[in-house]
Length: 132
Image (cartoon, rainbow, N blue to C red):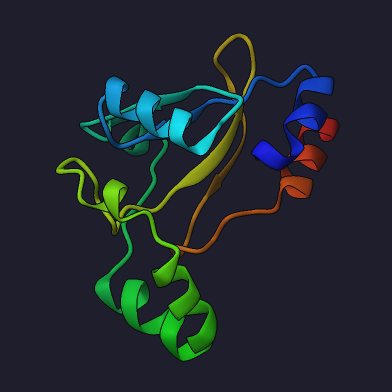
C-alpha cells in the first residue's frame, strides 16, 4: 500500500495497518519499513478476531508455497523479516485481511485472506473505494 499511498490519500482514504505486536513494537517496525501511515499494535489479536480473520494450517503455510512456486517460496523465505517473526506475540499462521471502514466505523468492504499469500493488489482496493 505504501507504493500507492498518494493515490489512496487522493481519494480521502486514510491507511492504517494492524500488527501483532505492542504499540511500541508496531511503531518501531513502521519506522524501520519507512511507512507513511500508522501501524498499530494488536498483541492479543483482537482486531484479527473481530474481523473474522482465520489461521493457516502448517500444510498451507509451509508445503503449498514450495510445491506451487519453489523459487518464489525460497525468495520469500530469504527475504522474510525474522525479527518480526520471533516476536512472542506473532502468530505466523494468522491470516490477514484488508478492510474499508467509513468515518462512522461501518465496514464497507472486507477481504479475508484464505491463504497466507492471499493479498489483493492495491488496484482492487482502489476499485472498491471508487465503488463506494
